[in-house]
Length: 320
Ligand code: 8YV
View 1 (tube, helix red, strand yellow):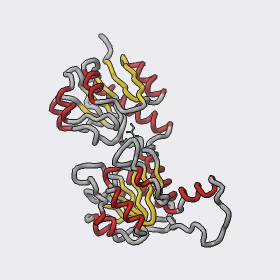
View 2: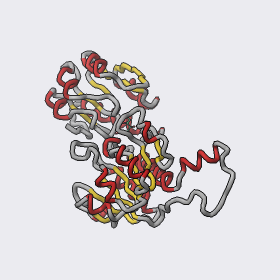
View 3: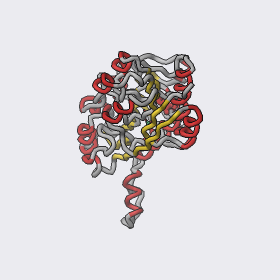
View 4: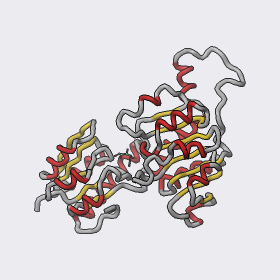
């Protein structure tokens, strides 16, 4: 029997590709940019499965014209906002994701951004690197202390809980807003707020870890940013569209928000040039899960889902 054919449009880890080649007929197309809708549609007639990233968009329009040969989209991402899940289900196409395996790597980047934004890292690096460091005083580059402060987490899923775990080791008091209150063994003392607005007034740092949906788009708009205490710090490693970037910039420039750490932007790749002149915003190019260990684990999790599917079983991470 011939082996299933799998399209891998992006440059996945070497270990992932080796394992994929061992089990499947793989069409590798290591693009350094997202595959276009036209390419996705074209490839759907040639393969039984795809392993795309969050950068390949399976909109309702794309789903409607995919070839009936394609049976499964085994994403190399935990986020599935790039996939119209009902539209793909309507075409009989399974969609899977890669939860768990990227939680620690993403929470590490959230910690990095929280610390980096609070302690003025962008400005400090620039001052030393440019040779402009010509003075020192106890009043020089004073930032905001993370240890012992209050952290609000929006979205207490796996990444949010990993962030809470790391923040606890800094003695932070953890607050969270989530669709449902967690059981005590998962909350580990974190304080639940059913109402996001109510939580915002009670935290010094805010970190976003929820998916983007029509309900959460622009979740942190001008009104909610104003609910944070003066000189709060905001961190986003989830999806750029959760924050109204113009409102964030205005809140930073007014001094209401002290700093921000962003790993994701409304427009990616590229980010928001309007934020670039503001050193109190630390920015990274969507690298939350970009460690060798996690990239291998994500690739393997996507392949586990494919293996189950082609063995006639329900993939562990089926999301539609
Ligand atoms: C990845 C992500 O970098 O998993 C997600 O949803 O946004 C990131 O972890 C990306 O999807 C890699 O494929």
